[in-house]
Image (cartoon, rainbow, N blue to C red; front, top):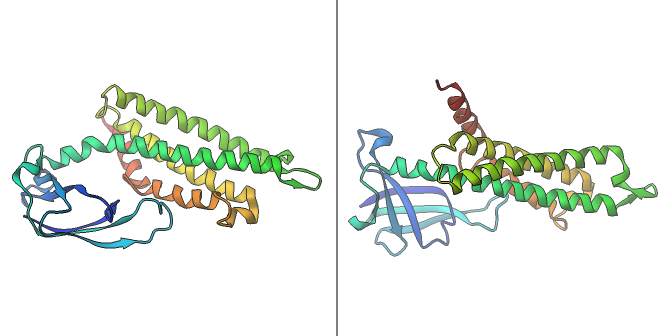
Length: 234
C-alpha cells in the first residue's frame, strides 16, 4: 500500500494512469525508491486541488492523494528499489522535449513579431524599418537558429539510443532554449508595445507559457549544476 501526496502533477486532474515513485527502503535514501503504475480506480487513490497557473493553462496541474492505496505487485516497474534509475533514464529525453517546446514558443513569438513589425506603420513607414526593431528581430532569429541546432542534436542522440551519453547536451539544450524562450517572448511583447500586453494578441500568452520551461524538468539552477558536474569530471 502507498501513502502520501504528490504535488504539481502535470495532467493530474485528468489522467487515468500514473507512474508513482515511493520509498520502499527508508534506510537507503535514493537507492530505496521504487516506481509503481497507479491507476485512478485503485482503492485509496484520489485527486486533490487543481492549481490555477500563470501559463500552460491547456495542461491542468494538480495534486494526487494516496491513502492506503492498494497497488498490485505486478504494477511494480522494473525491480524494487530501482525507481531512481528508471526516473533518471527518462529525464534526458524529457529535457530534449522541453527544449523543443521552448523552440516552438520562441519561433511562434518571433514570426508574429516579424509580421507585426512589417505591417505596423509609424511616422509613415513600417516599424520594421527602424534599426532598434531590426536589432531585436536579428537577435531573435539568431537565437532561434542556435536553439534549433542544439535541440536537433539532442533529438538525434536520443534517436540513436544514446540517452545516458546525452546528459550534458540535454542540460545544455534545456537551459539555453528556455532562456531564449523568455528573452524572445519578452521582446515580442516589447515590439508590439501596448498591444503586446493585451490578451487579444498571442504574445502575452507565449511569454506566460515560456516561463515554466525554466522550472519544469529540472530548474535552470539544476541544469547549471549538472553542466558544472559534467565539465569538472576527470
